[in-house]
Image 1 (cartoon, rainbow, N blue to C red):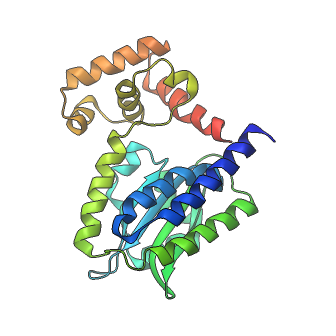
Image 2: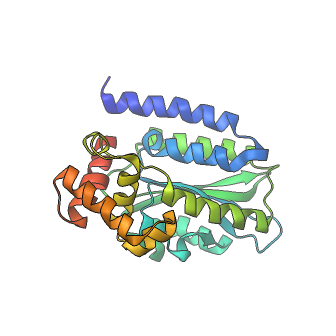
Length: 250
């Protein structure tokens, strides 16, 4: 068995556990666990899970994601979708304008349903030539069906989902990332996270605001990371952190 296939099967097993353990009272933590395992298990690069509010306009709020660059996570159009927008996205797939804005060459997704009504979505996408196999696509459909039933009793009030989406956005920017092994070996966790954000186009001032530190401290972390890695630009950092990470997953 190849290393990639073994990793996929291990991720699928862990994903099954995450789905089974998802509880309505703490559904966001459960969905985040699902999002973390989906890229390897389903053969995709990015995942976005949205939950529909039950007492507002019926919009879909982003509460969990994986593989979404910082500059996309800061884009307002990515976070909330109406039912009509979600339907259009799934119908047009990579031809949808949002896919173009976010640089996706392939996009698909599934509805999370309870008693036949859509209460959420899972959107998956790729920027490279990577594509899920039919087996992986069937696996994603199965997860979506199971998750819908588990979210039926969750607190889906608009105010709750808006607060959860805001928390998820900030948390996703400050969490340590999974980098290629040769990068993770030489960088401290904070250096790695800051370099990843910097490589995605954020300024020193923007990163400083996220971590509540000074821009000078951010620039020092970036300078030290450059020295440790032997690189000299954002572009080199992006290739090391993101492109090689995608190749490791293929």
